[in-house]
Structures are given as structure tokens and as C-alpha cells.
Length: 540
Image: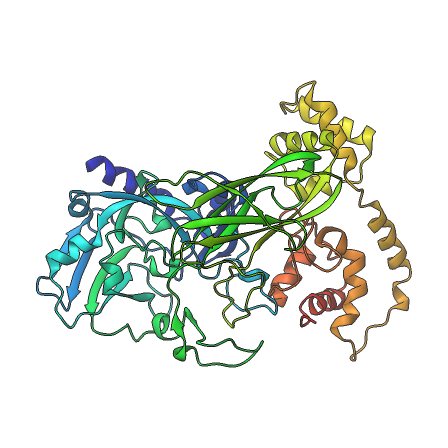
């Protein structure tokens, strides 16, 4: 127990005093994509989702308020309210009770929100607001038995140590039916993947609610109040609720009339191939995960002809401790070209992933079939691509490399320079790496277009009657090479269907961001605004 507290406190000192800038560095180092620095929101890198157990270093982070300062040795969990025997427990008390370990998938109910069109407000998660971890702690049912709930108790209402920044900002409090709280798998977790629960993931103690969405997994638990009714606060009465009937796109509604979001919908996730992967012709082993809050996964199917024909994947062995279901399938790559691979899962209750997502105001519960686009290529290019990922991307971002206007001689010089700097590229790997690098399409055409466009720029007049469509020319000449013709994402991230604040967009374009260069000198402010208006235009 002493070692547990010592380790937990050491982690606390390492994390709690980080500035937003250091959080950014932490997340970058740990292969997380940061959406917000305060409060910290970051999603998993695709590589983190490949193993059965999602590593802590790559596990997504979702907060509603700032990460609190927690003294592990003094932290108290109180079970009170409508109980006969209120109890208070230290972390040492909890660690001294019988422990239970299980695997459970944690998914944010807004996962994949960024793919909804028209877009919804909120964190623009892609596929990475999900993970599978081993959680160890005390079954909440055992503690509730000691507290002896009164007959009028129907919910546990849980709050954590995190506090809002402003006095009138609501605290993050959630209510869970007592029946679910008494599920033997509902835990007060002290460990994650056999390590003391990290502060960023709710340490020293977090509520774990298997098969329910993440907003119910309260972090830094301090109070468990047994109540007769749901908490009347914002995060129960207005947030995390779904309309009782399908709404028309853009239709207004009162969220207080909706149903609370609880069980995880049936879901699948393709982890190999990754988006834009180069796959050699021949047989390729597709791999993925599937999960559901309503039952076990009984079937996963794959299609590469837009759902006309579905092929059954092989399900992996079921882990006795739970967690997501792995699947695999040997896919024949018969010819070169672009492939679009879809996956859909079915659970033991007969729930199956729909082909299309049903629009909703919050962008919640997106569980439509998963899809990934990849390229079928010559096997040597595929081998070179694998070497490129393992040797080049350890130091460089993909955008930096794929944007280089180099030919064979240029790439050979670059490889020689990198080897002199210590890059471990063997004699057999170098020619294969060159095959891949030489297959990259040069962005030089875009540069020539841009020079020509600058020469003729005076012909393009901006006036007060401009519309979002007026930004199309600027977008195509300056942005489409990296972000795709329609803003769908290519070397750079997807732009269409995302709510991007104008000031953030202007800052990124004019000053640069990550591997994206600053273009403030070649684009006027009005031109940047036109591009922003173009990519933010309503979906047709």
C-alpha cells in the first residue's frame, strides 16, 4: 500500500503542475492528438488502438474542468445521502478491501462526432475517443451493502474533485440508477493496466461503469450520494441526452425532454489497414475491434463494394475478463488502386451497425459502419512504406515528408544524410524505401499554379457581395494538395464538416501549425477569411 501511494504521488507531482504548453508536449510525446489544452481533451493515436490492451500512454483523455490537485494520502470518498450507514474511505482503506480486475471499453459518447454532417458543436473527435483497459478496484456493490441504502434511494449521484473555473459554471455531476451501481462489475478503480490510476485518467480513484458511455465514469471520485431523483444540474438534465424521436437536420429541441445516454451502441473499428496505408497486392490481413454495451459480439462482416456483398470475419478468442472483441480477415488485394473497406458488427441482442449515421443535435452515438480507405500498390512499394513508417516517422511528421518536391536523386541524398545522422536504415531496406519515396506524387504542380495565380491575382476582385463559394479558387490553389479537393483530408487533416473558429483558422494559416507552414505572406487576411467561409459552408 505504501508503494502504491508513493508511486501515485510521484505521478501527481509530475503532472499536476504542467502548464497548457507542457500538456501539449506531454500529449505529443505520448502519441495523443490534442483537441483542447484547457480543459485537456486528447484522443488516441491509431497505433494505440492496435493491441488488445490500449496503453495508458496512448489512452484518450476527456475532462470537463481543469485537472484537480489531489493529495492521495488525504483523499476521501464519502458514501452518503439516503443510507443507513454513511461511510468515508481513504485510498488506503479502498486498497485494503478485496480487489476485482476486469477489462472494459471506455468510449466517449461523442466519439466520431467530427464525421457528422452537418456538423455539431462539441469536441471534434475522430475515431480515437475510445480505448480498452484493465481496471482494478473495489466492487461498488460491496460498499453499498455496507452503507445500506434506504428504500427511497433510486440513484447514486456522483461527483469528483474537479471544480469549474467560474462560480456559476455547473459542476460535473452524474446520476446512475442504483440497479447499475449494484452491478458487480461497477468499480471504484484504483489501477489501470495494473498501474496506479494516473491523475489524467481520474486517479487516485475513478468510477468504472462497464458497457456505459464515458460521461458516467466519474474521475477523482469524492462523493457518492444516494438520492431519490436524478441530479437536477446541467450535466444530467440538459447534457448527454438524446431526442426520443428522430429530428430533422437543424430542428430545434429541448434537451430536457430527451433520454439520458447510457449503454454503448454496437460498434466496430478497423485498425489495419490504417487510412491511406499502402497495401501490396496479394492477401492482406485485416484486423479490428468490436464491442457493444448490450451484449457480446457474435458477428463482424467486411465489405469493399459499398455494402453490396459482406464477408464474415474471424472472431478472436474471448478474454475471460471482458473487453472488446478482436477480429481478422484475409482480404484479397487483386489489383492496384483505391479501396474503401467497411466493417459492421452484430451483438448477441441482434443489434447491428447501420450503414448511415442518424443526425442528432449533439453529434452523439455515431455507430455507423466503420470505413477506411487505402491504396493497393506494388508489393515493393508496400514494403518500402512499412520501412518508411518504422524508420522515418519516428522523427518526422508525415506531412513534412510527403510534401517534399523531390525525385530519386534527391531522396537518395536525403537518405544518405539521415543515415549519417544516425538513422538505422540497412542496405537491404534503402532500395525499398526509395521505391516508396519515389512513388509519392510531387506537389510541384501546386507550386507552379500558385506562382501563376499570384501573377494574375489583380484580376480577382474581392467585394462586399462575396459568398463562401468565392473562397473556392483560393482553397483549390493553396489548400487542396494537402487537405484534399473537397477538404476531406489527405496529408493534412480533414477540414470539411468541422466547426473551426475563425480566429483559430486564421492563426493556423497565417502563422503555421505543426508541420503546416505559415502562408501569411502569400495570402491576404481577406483571402484567408474567404477560404474559411468556403470550408464552413453548409453541406449540400
